Image (cartoon, rainbow, N blue to C red; front, side):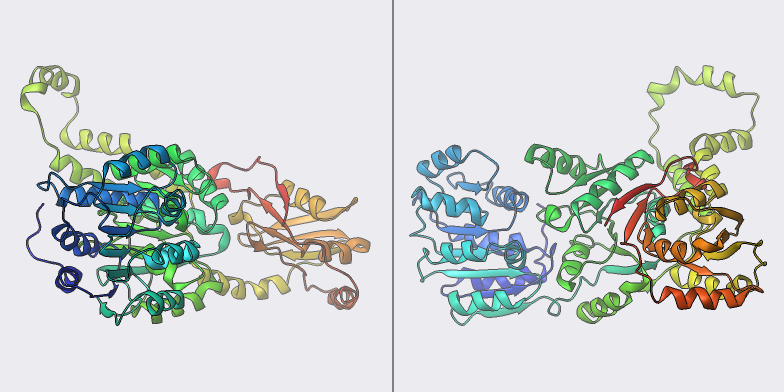
Length: 566
């Protein structure tokens, strides 16, 4: 199988499992060779003449269960009598019962289905000599604590027990005290430490720029093969749908998919028919893919352990990988916490510029042209016709046309698209424009002039601003002059409605970014003071989200605002 020397976790664990009465706690990241570390010694110790389970391997997901069983079948290729059974939910329990009755030696199981079989009295664990808990922290996070306790209570105390975990939460310490005898602790790296082969990069952007930043990152790495982690099922599906609509080779994986849909998506991803898989943390557990180039966090997870698991899916088996996080300003604290936990520093980078992306894509195409294998015999008959067709073009023209054919659409897009500035740059820009905001023109008689923190670069135009005011403020509001700038705007409303407009609009958000409407300080600055005093006695409107922000770069100028109550 190409193994030449043991990986560190194998070197430590294999001798212990070959012995007797050795309980082991192994802290190691995903992709460090754990399956062989426990698989090879338990197979060697199996007595194939006894057709009963002698090894039990518990894991959190169906996918990991199947992956472990496949690996063990590979390792035991020349042990013809050995029987390995994966036991998991979502498949026929009757066929699993029949296989158990015929006799098996190794059971790889998810806790829920195994407990079901035990309650039916169809599986006998009385001769189990080795118990392995793989990704124990994930099983506990998924709520399997009671099931694990019930299963371990039925297994003889005279057995080896091995617990694998990437992190060491308190719940695992409880299990080790209850079921393990003087366990030997093996730590590959430091506790909770990330894989040393992984670069950790973050981009700090505004909330409304997160998706545009994601697209640029995907474009900047033409050969990307990675997982994009989202926090919720809804966000996962929305991001996947947007990527597909924008022409990316992507699909989603989350808990609302049926088992057949999950299997189909995961199979496409494994054979690289998909470049990008958008997934939730739970759905991606057990997805065992060795060649991931990138993991992208579409926002940081709430806990460090989840980040460790996410990033550990790249940089496996000694290869290098990149973990990218698309963050907003409020997540600076999380970055520092994760850095302390994994003992690695994040690299802050700027979102790639359009010209840099186009250059990267074009050079990647040239690399493919250089490396393409030419079947001389197959194309020989076609070449005379091709040469006649192109003989009026010189070499330089042919190269230009080939590149343009492939990249005109991308070049046009980035030619029109403005650059995405970091959140810090945006804050500075707002500060620089404060003076301009305070010196704005005097409003017309009977009108009050306001500042709003949206402008042309946000895709805001006069008709959309009018519609936004009408959506936010019930009743009829007379609107005067509108003055649009790049990153902010001014508008005038009937002086009598000024307080109501200001209070109502400040209770709204656009794609997670709060609308800020403030008095524009002109010659009638005394009115601003009057407005502010009156505001103290007003109640703000309920917080409401508006989605589908107008974006002239994506041709959405005519799309209506949609309202959704938070």
